[in-house]
Length: 494
Image (cartoon, rainbow, N blue to C red; front, side, top):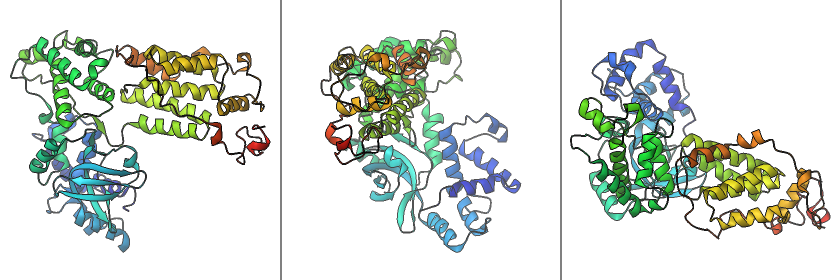
């Protein structure tokens, strides 16, 4: 496997050498389609564009010598790499290939099976990190290479489209996928002029709302939001959300399970509403009105849905559930807090977000963090009053009726070991200051999501996805979770 930081070393060498400054300047002008070096300082850098440029510079850009940067690096060997190390770079040079891939299979912590729309081949990729982000059916651009006899991903964190391909869409991609695609092409699609919708045709605001509402109804999103709700988001966008957040929130409510054609139509309908809705930042005029006043004012609407390496909240949620399965409730509660922190950062949601609040409540009760547990149940029911599992959970904990592992963990937190017969008095529980509760990331996330007027009260959901904990999961010969050092059967199981 190519050592971590290998491409970074190449970039460091060429960016820190004064002799290559004119080459880098020429590369920037080419990649971003600039008119001259004076425009370089006005480049609209973002994480995606920077990553794509770095990859294109190393693999695709040609120096005045006619060599790519990677070829030049292998010939110069500026860091005096040993022969076996150079062999890895030569493998990279000889076999690297950039393209559009579809995820066919995912083997957690091991690798992926990818389908390349250009070569029409499947590749088994040795990869770890991306297996936590990608799912079968996802599309993304990346670069692969055969290093030491196996294929691996050697590109930047490319944009990922979490959509599932229908038969017709797959046929179109197989037929029309561009040959010799490079990161420069992808950047133009995402961040460049191709990403802007010409406004030569006047869009009727009422028709834009009707079209978006129809799109919501066809995808089932009308259960959660209306076209008018999105319009209100835009009206108040200075204090609420920006266009990228609109995409993130709407696709979060679909659980990212939409066909590409439907996704494109949804994005286009969202764009029309955005462009025809007055905005405070534009003097209470819509982007369309501003464009009519000045055609140079071309509104941008970012259609990037997610990025490889993004969706941190999913990884953190999985970690929280893993800790719960191991009865490590304290770490689980902290992981749930990190989950909500990531949800706030990524400005997204999910249709049953209240489930996470119920899971978090269980973890807090197990830690004897009574105030936080009660708050999480309260927020779950505020988001969905019909959530009967949370209703039962609330009644259960108000009565002090705990499942054995949960009750055991509570007593451990309180320095008690007896689990039969008695109930823990709420007076003995650890006091959680109000300011701590209000500063909890889940409470902050609730305040953010509540102002958007999303209707999460869509069903009762009697079958809970909450991880269940049976006492049988604690083996009689296993160490007692109370921390005594004795076997469970000789301690708290008695």
